[in-house]
Image (cartoon, rainbow, N blue to C red; front, side, top):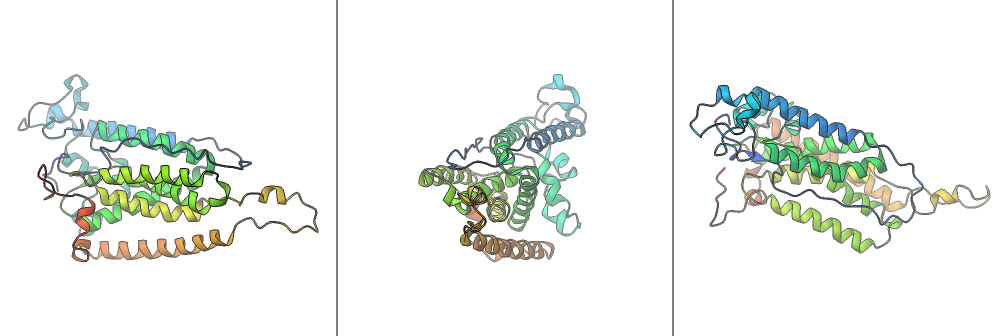
Amino acid sequence: MASEDPERAKSRGKTYPPTYYSPSYMVESAETMWTSWLVPMIVVANVGMFIAIMYVNDCPKKNLGFEGACVAKFLGRLSFQPLRENPLFGPSSSTLEKLGALEWNKLVHGHQGWRLISCIWLHAGVIHLLANMLSLVFIGIRLEQQFGFVRVGAIYLMSGVGGSTLSCLFIQRSISVGASGALFGLLGAMLSELLTNWTIYTNKAAALFTLVIIIVINLAVGILPHVDNFAHIGGFLTGFLLGFIFLLRPQFGWLESRNLPADARAKSKYTVYQYVFWVVALVLLIIGFTVGLVMLFRGENANDRCSWCHYLSCVPTSRWNCNN
């Protein structure tokens, strides 16, 4: 909503810490390592977009002074909104909404479906931007080195859209911005990659435990107010399914089996359960996106179908409420 400031607006992952998981449990690694360029480009694009947002925001000219003076006035028109309005050192809600923030009414009744993607490239403030970009560097570069820019880029964008869709189905009274839905998609893909390539890892339990703890901690932060945990959950589930589809590795020993004599029985490239995971994940992904997008553009409120789901994004306590 246009009158809502970023402190009240749902900000995706603005407080969760940068996460890192190194797949150092690989037994066999004869695959070519890719040079990571897409992830750095995404970081540059997000930083450039934030500078453009602040230029359009132009606090010194447009701030009416109701919430105080602009912060860091030496930056000129790039200075931040008053901290009472936006404690993340960023623009106003109206600027974010104008430039493509996720907003249910504009998306459904204004037919602005492009906001499902544009909101991924917007951030509510410097703190929000730094948290997400640091996480992207730690997570995304290693994934891109292992699987290439096409697969990682597809997971990033599709997870972002999945997070935006679920967010808009449940949160219809505030705007939402941020790349953390896409980031949680990368985390989800890392988990499914571990599961579908289980046979080529040693210390499997340690790898699984480490990754699950990282995911749980990040999702737990989402129950705080003003954090869009539905974007996190939607992105995570989308990335989790995409990992089964895009991140398959040949089973251990397959590369060596290709050098066996012609009359020797060659080892299959993938296991049966990898194929099963692939088919099931593809079916669930198609069903999930179809149902979600149909519900969204029909203007349905997912809270009407799940009376307790709002607790997944905010749990009220004596210190805060979840009215917005």
